[in-house]
Length: 203
Image (cartoon, rainbow, N blue to C red; front, side, top):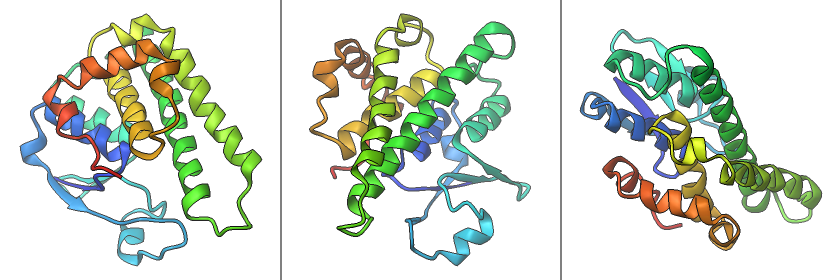
């Protein structure tokens, strides 16, 4: 299998953590890919018109999009337990993960607004609104012990990637001081090899 990825992508990191935990990482070829707003990448666009990371190409040549769908595919392949099979826990995990993905989307948009959009065209209120979505999402997880203290699953993996991306791109945002329970959770998660080795490089 081949996984398009960037070491800076929290979405690709999510899949890498899952693949390590499921014992599948050695069966996946990591293929670096560069995608950025306003930058043409015709080769990658032929794989996915959305130009988003990551993409998994299976041994049969099938293209699987979206980090959650890829994790679900790998989890099923390995007979893992990163995503509950059925019942209320499954829908809770999927809902929590949807919130996490939305937080990551908003953080990425804030990054683009600040670093990519030309000076004079930046929309501060729009950026503030997106940052608030991520920040209040953190506040919600701060008060969700069932996630912070629960079994290692897709929700915890996604939350690790949110906090890691905050460190990576928004190092001065102060999330640790604001959310001490998330800080303790993050420190505990860094004890897992899959989480530690996938930390993005220094910005």
